[in-house]
Image (cartoon, rainbow, N blue to C red):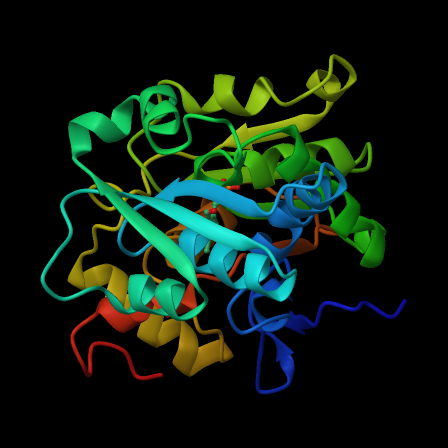
Amino acid sequence: MFSLIPIQPLQSDKKPHYNPPVDVLRMDKIHTVVSGNKWFKLSGYLREAKEKQYSTIATFGGAYSNHIVATACAANLQGLNSMGIIRGERPDVLSHTLQNALNYGMDLYFVSRAQYRDKTAVQQLTDPLGKYYWIPEGGYGQVGAAGIRDMLKGIPLWEYTHLVTAVGTGTTMAGLIQGTLPYQRVIGIPVLNNDQCILSEIEALLTKADFAKKYEILTGYSFGGYAKKTQSLLDFMNQTYQTVKLPLDFVYTAKAFYGLSDYLQSAELARDSKILFLHTGGLQGNLSLPEGALCY
Ligand SMILES: Cc1ncc(COP(=O)(O)O)c(C=O)c1O
């Protein structure tokens, strides 16, 4: 079947490099800025904002947030204004992410880390008349998950026994679980140290019927926490690119792919298994690494 999203079989010397074979859903390739899972997570929110005749989208994120820049660009494409509530004081020099968001016309509003924790208070402060359409931080919610579930209708889903994704808010994983077929297993790999609560946040987006599906969280791959990295993670990214030509970002997809590599070695998988790894985007985040850290 033709898939609108490119699928890359991971090969070396024209043969599958992994056993069982791994294909990558290159969602990162669908748009240069609204890349990866963002296109699908945001589409329902933007549709709803337009239907309800809002003219401004507002959301939350950090200085390097893929979600912030993707929302700025997507809103701009839809002819909507946007505002980003940014965690932390305004720095003298803006990150490339925030500079790009500004270039797409997003207004940036900086709040202290303490203020940022109370999202409702920030909303009341910045939008006292309730004129903005608010997208939760990271696009978390039913609407975001539905976009991922619908995305699965456009790919040859039945070919795969396992679907694997990085987990931030868990919205993408929830969408995968919703759209998965009975014989498939969804594996989520958290990139934050949120092992205690992430499963319940994912399950809050599921229906009772989804609870019967096969899914699991693999922990131990945060590499110290959100957006933290080690030299071994960077080495792994370079090695992956050199062997199978897969460019990963250090915040999400590299950690998830590292977890998947371990899983392939340790889990006892049936011989007919075939894995689909979601490249959920985020490559813009690599611009914050020192020059020369990556070979791509
Ligand atoms: C590149 C990338 N991959 C994965 C994720 C995790 O997605 P989710 O928040 O839906 O778990 C994010 C965050 O949205 C992301 O920016």
